[in-house]
Amino acid sequence: MAKLDGYYILVESEDPAYDNEVTKQPVEKGVNLTDHVQRAPRSMPLSGVVAGPDAAKTKDYLTRSSDSGRIVKYVGRNSFTGLITGLTTSHDNTVADGFNFSFTLIEVQIATSTPVSQLPAPMKSQAAPVISSGTKQPKTKDDKKKKTSSTSGKAAPKKKEKPEVKKVQFKKGSKWE
Image (cartoon, rainbow, N blue to C red; front, side, top):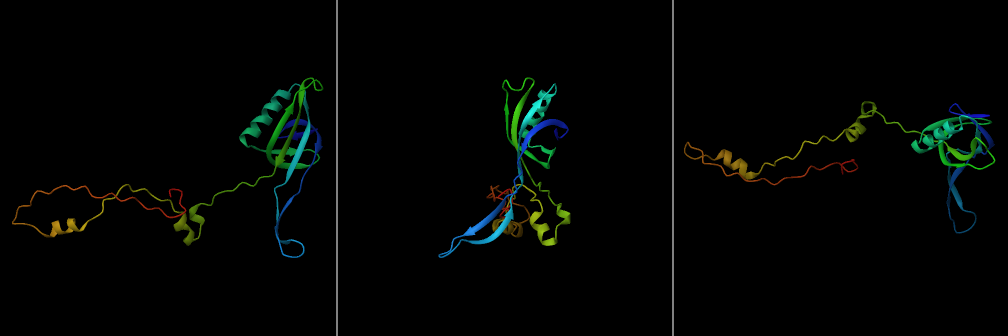
């Protein structure tokens, strides 16, 4: 009997895979040139049977975990932590109060964000959030001339002109670009 996050499942086969990704560059003569090898995410296809009074609860948990992308812990002949992908269930006459299943567990690595306060100074300026200050009215040369020139004591009524609205420019690569 194996366990998947506390749910008992009878696993008939575990087939862990340990793949690598190899880059290949063609050459004019001879064998292709290999310049980089990187480990691919581990995977483990499982197939088996779930039977008994809790089979419906187990099936519900498997489908919810698969749909939501929940990371599950499997303990059987091998131990594995990952996501459930490709879940299929079979309901036929061979299992009276349960079902046959097959799915693949895939290893995942979850990225976490670094708080801006922990970044080096050059990166802080790039990672700082852009604050929207709204539309700004530009100062024109006409506005400056009106302030400096005044007529005999009384100010002439000012005409209100609608200034040209400039758009805020965002840094390249920002999420608002």
